[in-house]
Length: 329
Image (cartoon, rainbow, N blue to C red; front, top):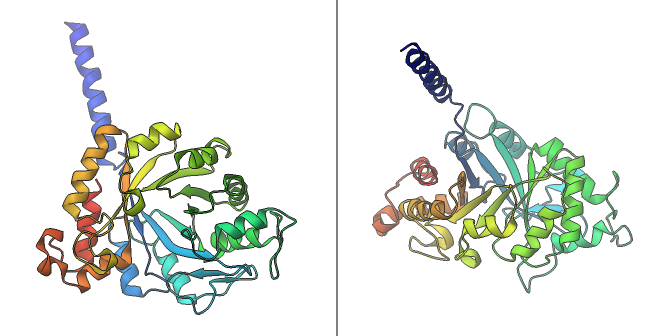
């Protein structure tokens, strides 16, 4: 009888501790990622909506490196964001990015480096590949990975001035793993992590993971739309054979200026159903994301809930953000 009482008290204590942890919010919440194309330089109201959206990771996107070492936003090609190792972009944007960490849900901020598609002029990853080699400098740039190099200067500005936690690699054409591995090591030296944003070529991305210092790459964002429409997180988890988490990224309705399905875009309900299916093949899946803020705004601008009710029911940007975020759980 005494043993039964002791056992009961022990189980009660365990239950109480677990309940206390849950009540204290110590049960890990899913990582929900919002890609932010259409937010440079942005406006205060958009950033306020993002802060209160419930998303936990904000991906500033998309940014391109040019032949002279300048970095441009895909939202504004009129002047560089980074020039000659210094911030040269919109000052209001810096304040908006900093505001994401204040009184909101965003816990992590990344910046996406986008490359070219096949057949497009060289940019970003062509130049990273060349400049990593100290013998291949170009006019206006300093090759190599030293503190005076162009690449070091770019990463330093991203970390210290823009204030991001990681750079995200969206390479869709060059696929030179050696240069990305060295870029990751350079990022580590500036205090940044590196994340990967693939949709195909598992062996390429696995090479980066296998040959990077532990902890440098700490997230993988799998494109599950367009060219990656058949991508399945469980397949990538097994193929990469890594402990780094894989998060599926969905394209929302409103993308490509249509309320209907385009490039495998999905409504919140369709995302929820797809994520449920993904979890059967990857029970440890702990989050997901949406591409992108500009499409979310387009969905509302086009009044998609009225013209195509199958796309969803949101009539405001905050409402659509909430519905999308909830679909990622």
